[in-house]
Amino acid sequence: MGSLLRSTPFQLLLCILAASLFGELLPLSWVRGAYTLSLFFIDCVLFILPVMIFSYMFNALIAVDEKGPVLVFSLLGLICLSNATALCFAYGVGSIVIPHLAVHVTLDGMASTIEPYFRMPLKHGLRSDFVALAAFVLSFICVKTRSTIQFSNNFISLVHKLQTFISVFLKKAFLPLLPLYVLGFMLKMEAQGSLTFLYTKYLPVFALNVGVSLVYVLILYKVISVWYPPMKTLIFNMLPAGITGFSTMSGAVTMPVTLECTTKNANNPTLAQMVIPTTSNMHMLGDDITITLTALTLLMVSGVPIPSFIDFIPYIIGFCIAKLACVGIAGASLLVVLPVLKEHLGFSSEMVSLITTLYVLHDPFGTFHNVMGNGAFALIVEKTFTKLGLIKVSEKIQKQ
Image 1 (cartoon, helix red, strand yellow):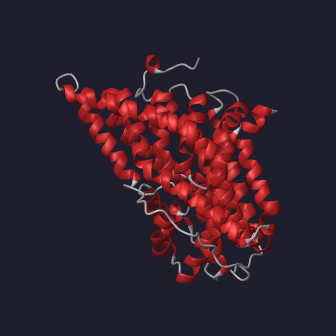
Image 2: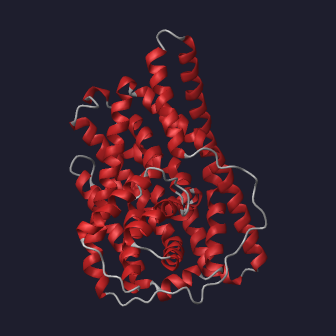
Image 3: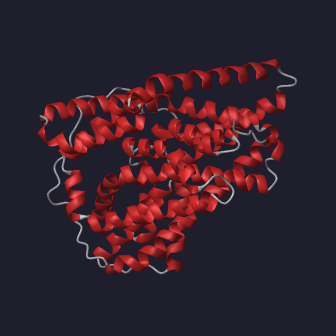
């Protein structure tokens, strides 16, 4: 019983339940205080996030030696292909189901947004795609020069120690404080009426988004269970990361937990250390499906017919390209594709406002599916690279 109480997923579930049951009873000043602490926590984590991504990716690329460039470009291709497949799946289901849904979406009755007492003056650092590019370039240089230049070996050793330090920080400070971060955000959502709006006025589309995302993720795990442990085992190993993603609404904040859970399923933890930092920002299957289904719904509500698949292809291409510049924080996935919605689906300013609000309501469930999908995608990448000969069987690190 004691180990259960100390487990992070159990504590997160308690915070979610407590906020839903007792959030309305708390004074607004308490809710603002809890939300302020949550923002302080996320600001600190995002401040060090570039260093974390750099160290994990750099060490992973060093481990795969001179195959790094081929692996990186192959990985980006698989990410685009996976995102495009999810978009096509969402379009196929949405074009059939959405016309039969009786939905009238407005923002009437929504409370004003709760503001924190203050924000820390911390910059969130470099964009993750720039950090990943720096890790790629520097690792390639170090691999090429470490036999002739001692500084390259010293730099490799330094980054390795940095990753060790970050890992200790995440286990000793990040995970223990994570429930407090979650509690503040859940109290804020409950106090401003977001959850009530979600369950009363938007339930049909909400249920469709969650259901389609869940089915798609389950299909992925069913497919990879052909080569890996049974589907039940794979999902059970990833659930702590999924629950953490649901609670934090941030793929970036959840990344350390996602990495730990994915290595339980993977045969090559080193490859997972390269895949997860990349996919946590660029590969968000839950967001792909949620944004697409919500966008198609808003088109129908506005009296605009759902486009044909041929007309939908430019949206798919623009969406996949935009996601390569995404960051794994709450709301970022939608922000980078707003220009795509305007250009290829003809979204008006009112529709942009609607989808932004509705997306935030979906964010906990979307992040859950993002994280679970990334765990499955990492295994798909591992199997694909093995089949293509990019990773030799002898290079695999077998789990104990």
